[in-house]
Amino acid sequence: MQTADKQQITLALITDPNTNLYGKWGVLIYNEAFSRLNINGSYIVLPALRASNTADSGKIDGEMGRGEWYAKKHPNLIRIEEPLFNSNLSAFVVNPSIKIQSWDDIKAGQYKVEYYRGIALAQQRLTQRVPQNNLTDSSNPINSLRLLQRGRIDIYIGVSLIVNELLVTPEFIDENIHLVAILEEGKIYGYLHHRHEKMASKLAETFQQMKSEGLFNVYLEQARQFIKTQDSTKSLSTSSTDQ
Image 1 (cartoon, rainbow, N blue to C red):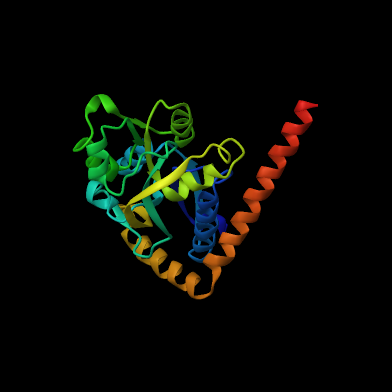
Image 2 (cartoon, rainbow, N blue to C red; image 1 turned 90 degrees about the vertical axis):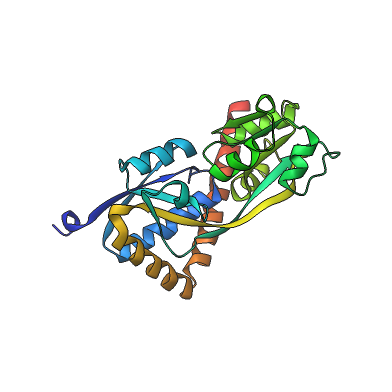
């Protein structure tokens, strides 16, 4: 009977918590906060643009983590006013001759550029600077990094905390893909549909309390250990298959 009284909340993630450190970290943080607020939380992994559309429409209750000014483009969503992580929008390259420090350097270079679909700031900056025939977007950072490997694109623009976790996986660790420029600095916040305005305030207070207790750091280490375990399991599985 107690469970029936709990509010049900579903949040979208744009990273898989079974493979991404920050996705897993976020799930651990929200699970604790929801427990304290007597909420049943669930999560669905969606591409960035679909996550936006689904949250905007109110079909789900919000998104686990987006950039600082996300609500400006999505007025149906309310920011939880306590950040989860620090995050940057960065440029990644393979070719060491590509030297950029700003968005305008990308414009000057006439590069083939791909960016993470659904990141409104990247779209805004790039469509003003890169010709349409040199600009693509993708909902899958892994595929974008593969294109970068093969020389099909010159620059990939993505969220550092997502891409950096991919670059230490076996597929990419020896591929010389590197971060060449931080183009925008920012923080990641949770967002809820505006019908949950009161809950957004409660979650902000709960996150602050959890930080003061040191739980954000505890859950980061738990997330790291979980991802290591997943990677080890994959390695063993691959070895068994090879034999």
